[in-house]
Image 1 (cartoon, protein in one colour):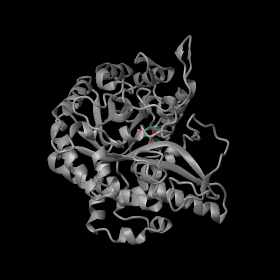
Image 2 (tube, rainbow, N blue to C red):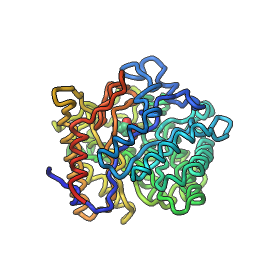
Image 3 (tube, rainbow, N blue to C red):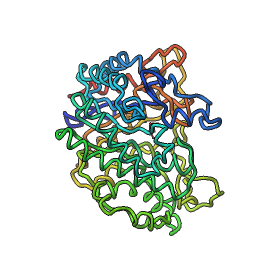
Image 4 (cartoon, rainbow, N blue to C red):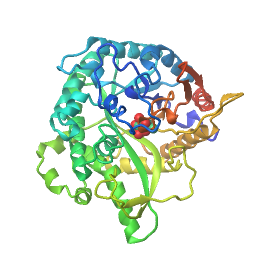
Length: 452
Ligand code: FCB
């Protein structure tokens, strides 16, 4: 192994991650009501393989086995997400059966000595809230706080680590600009209003959780990218500035420093709308957090290109293109750059020196083939090993990295790709729902057993 566990601090969090809609299934059971994903996946053409997440990996019924599997792998942490429409009914009342599912899951996790990290929002907005304006409406931030109070009140005795939002960039820009994700709207720069309401929801939720559970540790998970200009030309430098702005700084600066990057609001042409928002919002968004979660997958090498007019996930910077530098790519087409993880940790750390940082997702899709040795996913294995080695370098450099979570524990419903992309270190046969640990899972287990 090029990296060993004992090169990390003894109390480092080593985990795997999942998300409710991607693994649970049971979408109409025990009082759960539809989320935007239940609606979106039924619109023809939205999911590459035409599948839906109604059953997914059936984790709702098989969680006990999945927790046992984690225990066998030897992780000490598990990041999962809570489905808003499972725990809160549309009339605003708690749904005891939905809450009970998370209590049973958490009890099993805690009994195995695994520390839970609960994400409160991993993209599955209740549909009735989308019908009332979704994240374009400020009211959704207040609705989020009411949901968070219910979830924390009902589960706080079992969870000490809360992650408010997963990847608000995706919720806002894939959801309301390119339309690749639920709710599938294509609004150009207006989608940035969703960014503000999402971040406000985060900040207000942090304050609410602090009141309810003063000793909880709170964070948010941002998808950050290592960004490089394709050349030294002024156009390419500007392309890199724009993408770094829209994907990284638009989230890091308000959350960690209490202001929006002026250049990004100008790129979006939305200075006026943002200036009109109550000034107390940024103070709320800048609420102190205990750790920053970073989901890292890839690097973008940016160049100035042309825009064909199709809805883009980069509103205001539609002409920016990403060039192929010849780096190996995963099945998602994402270039593999392990050292990029150090770039994003360094960048995030520069906004809040000393704030603990966690890689709350890192992993890769590859077309797994079963052979005589089961699922011998050597590429995923290399991907994870190289990224953990880069995390070791970051720790050596003095960056306050305190945890790493593989995406994902099990194969699952990969959003717009349906079941056509697998990220698990454990294979799921969707016919039989049988789980089989892949070579990458065995590698992770051996790594985890190897030190401390
Ligand atoms: C991230 C998502 C996660 C998963 C991975 C591959 O953007 O947070 O749910 O889909 O990508």
